[in-house]
Length: 121
Image (cartoon, rainbow, N blue to C red):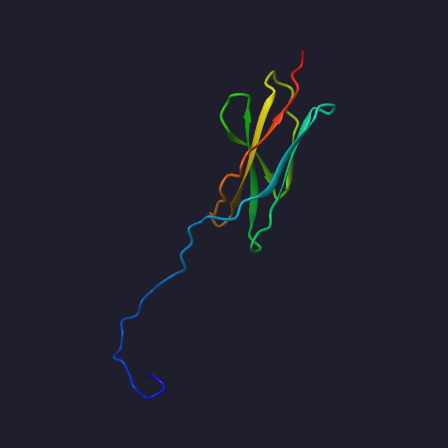
């Protein structure tokens, strides 16, 4: 019934739910710095979740000419120390980060960052 008193015929009920594509925000300001003295690469990033979601980070790594593959979980930490870098003969390491949410949502993989680690002679 509208404000003038006109009434429409009854309609059939409709069920609906909000659409969620499952895509979540990704990380920003991804950096990787090699510390050759301590044989470690520190990867860090910034993440500002839109809500209080339950989420965790996964770090991906490519060594040399290999493929970018899932490497380690970083939990909710916004940095990760790769102590395995520098022990191999390869000198090029590439890192990317993805955010996973408990509700099934996933962020796109971040743009990768590259570290050139000095080769040992």
